[in-house]
Image (cartoon, rainbow, N blue to C red; front, top):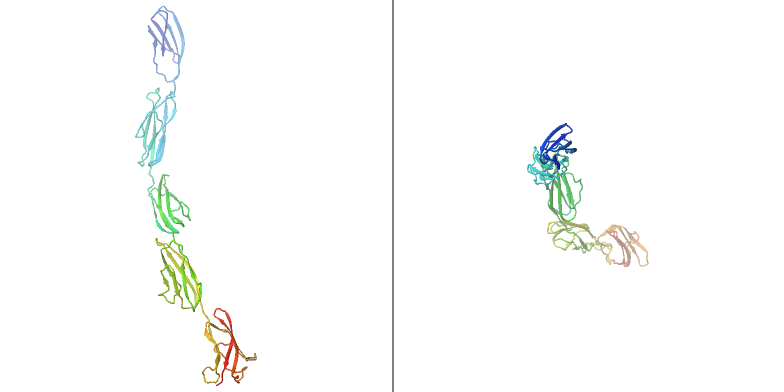
Length: 425
C-alpha cells in the first residue's frame, strides 16, 4: 500500500489503519509511504498524513481486493496401449484469471503455455502412470498443481487362419479367429469381407463365408478384448477364387438307328484346356471315354445313353455338361415272292421274316385273284401253308395277294402289300 503527500513542511507522518482489526501503523518519512501487509481476504484501510507544522489531511479510504488462490484438479484415465490420452487440468479457482503457464512432469509432453499433454500409452500394466502439471498465474505463489493417473490396458494379440486361401468358384472358406488371454469376453471377433455371401452372423467364430464369383477378396477382422481395447487386422488378398470353365456340347444326330449307330459330339465348352468324355456305353469300357476336344462314338446296342463332358481349365477347375442320345432298333423285313407247299420241308410255308419287329402286333392276310380272303394270321411265326380258309385243300398254282401289317419296336406301323406265287411240284 503506497501513500504520497505533497505541500506543507516535511517530514510527513503517515497513519495507516486496518479497519478489520483496528490496527494502526505510523511511519514518518520526508517522502512517500510504502506498506506490504500479507492478506488472505479483502481488507479496508484508511490513510492520513500530518506535516511538520501539525497540518493534517485525511483520512482517505483504501480497499485491497484479495482474489481466491489458484486451484486445479487432474483426472484418472483408463486407456489402451498405443492410444493417445489427452490430459487437460480443470481449473477450479481461477486465481487472478490468467494468463497461465503450465509445466508437465512424469514423461508427458512438456511445454509452457499449453493445457493438454498427449500420452502415447505403450506400456500396459497394473500400476498407473502418474503425471503432474504445475500451473502459475503470476499471482499465487508457488502456484498450484494437478495430478493425472493413466491405467494402460493391453491390446488383444489375435490372428486368424482360413481353411482355404484359394480355389475354384464357388468356394466356401471357414475362418477361425484365435485370441489370447484377454479375449475371454463374448463375441470378441467381428468379420468384414469385401465380397462373398455370409450364411452366418459377422460376430460368429469360426466364421463361414461363400465366394460364388471369381476374384480376390480382402478381410478386415476387428478384435475387441475384455478391456474394450481393439486390434484391427486387415489383409487385402486373403482369398483367391478362380473362374470355372463352362462345359457344353451337342450330339449329331441326337437319335440314330442301330443300322447307323455312330454319333458325332461337338464340344462347345469355353475357358477350358482339357476334356473328358463319358459316352455312357458301358458295354465296352475301352472305348467308353475320350479326351479329345470333339469325339465320335459307335454304339452297339439300342437304348438311351447318358453322356457326360467334363471341361477342365488350367487351374484344374471343372464343369460338367450332360445330355442324352438314343439308339433305336431298326426294322428290317424280307418277304419271299414264291413258295412250294409240297410237304418236303423246304419252302413249304409263306411268311415274312426280319428284325426289329414287334411280334405281338402282327397280322397277315392272303387274297386270291378275285379279292377273296382265304387266309389270316396274327402270329408272326405262323405262315400260310397254301390251304384255303382252314381246310386241308391246297390252293391252285398261281399268284396271290398278301397284305402284311407290321409294327416295329418303337410302335411304328407299316403295311406291306404285294404278290406271292404258289407253285405246286
